[in-house]
Length: 115
Image (tube, rainbow, N blue to C red; front, top):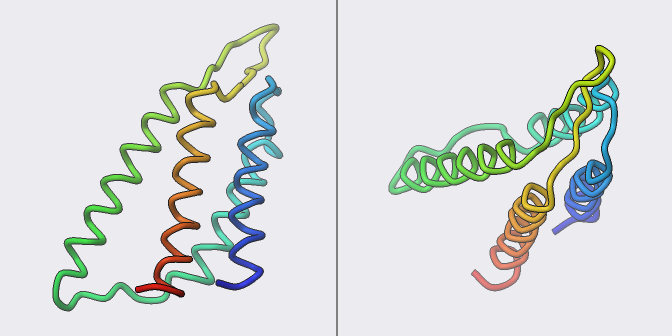
């Protein structure tokens, strides 16, 4: 596991922790996490292996990710005031995100050192 992997995971956790306090919904609010995700996708996803049970594992991981994303989205609070939108991640949304990022880190450590 590289230093970049640690920095990316910790940056994504910090982004969600920052969203625990209510913020006005702006382009910056969206672009920072989107930029991090774009970097990760462009550097880590090169090809999808399709041999053996790889597609089953990929499908299961995509389904789990979609489920966790939907749960996090449903527990995020959005309100309008004076024509502006304000967003705040609930404790449940932050807990789901941190748990999923911790699981990702644990999985990377497991496959690079044990499996």
